[in-house]
Image (cartoon, rainbow, N blue to C red; front, side, top):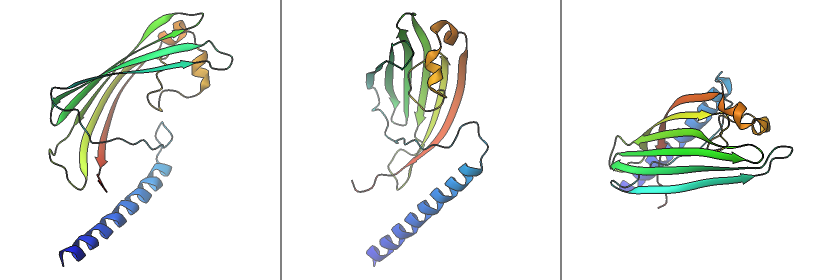
Length: 177
């Protein structure tokens, strides 16, 4: 009996997820936001409290008809509490025949309102960015409109700073182990 109820609940949940995804697709098509619709995946997994994770993300690129560049982003992720993880990114880049500059920083925070795992886990994501146009970190889709961004000199790119605040509600689920 319990098994039948569980199967029925799972079928209903799957239908709800499919309908929600379709509605989101329809609304995204009609929305008049500044960015085109795209899909990015996130996880509800948090850094363990008291642990510091340090990582390096680098790119060495040779765009056609532009100077070679080497960019670096250092990520510091720290688990403050079981429900709160904070990350700090420092970015810079060096362009051949140009200069080496600091391009800015990002500060991300993830808050998990429910401590235990549930069928659907929620995380509130807050990010502040302070980057200039010379940034070549490519950590996300927004901010880089075309290959033309790579033709800017560091002096031109440094003159314009973009600041943004981003809020997201992440919903995730762990299925099949």
